[in-house]
Image 1 (cartoon, rainbow, N blue to C red):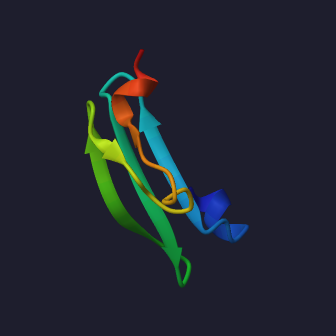
Image 2 (cartoon, rainbow, N blue to C red):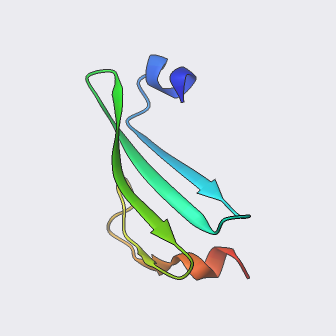
Length: 61
């Protein structure tokens, strides 16, 4: 995450397949702000792909 922040990448998704979670972050003035923590089969609609919604469960097969 520090590397992405240093390079100015505006969004970061942290996906954990073991815990079946997704955390979405947005870079604001050099700091990561947590937008959402999703789990299991929650619907995902997070920037920068918030124009599309999918089930987090589709990642777990």
